[in-house]
Image (cartoon, rainbow, N blue to C red; front, side, top):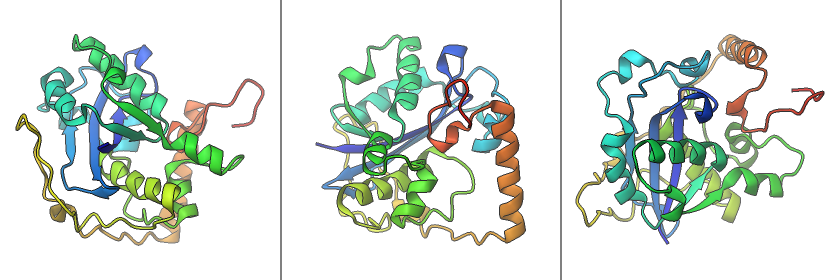
Length: 242
């Protein structure tokens, strides 16, 4: 089965409150190795960002103003993922948003076309009682994410692919720079990106003061929101400490 490592970025935490998908990033794995046939789209949401969401992603409504809406790329997206196993971290979040987008576009359920593997559930089973956000798993499994200064759909999908391989086989790095093959879609609507154009991955050296400022900003966002959804952990129940 084709495996598609998928990540989305959104305007906020809950699609039920009118939030929308603003970025979809997908990395195709064939025989558990990246093929180079990736899918990446920014989307115009037709709604504003919740407080803090734009800051986390680095996206803005101005940047997204000339991007297509989901309904304009949905057929291309479905042709790409159809019949695949989607590998998603905290899958209920991404699938909830994608199913909402499918409904708004007048399409059927995405879940009827794919199977879904949730790496957050896998990590919680393997590391019970520990933090299992994507960043925490990178540290624990030795996956390099030094270049991840902001959340991004395609970048996070690439990192998650490394994490997934490490979770399931212990491999550390799957080498996005050397795809074994380039897949094409029979419909001819999916572009096979030159992965070498995304590489080498930049190595960003963060100073102690920059790291301290970053943590302080995240702490302010956590306090304001009451919960840090980017940590990949469920919101605390009433009476629990965040």
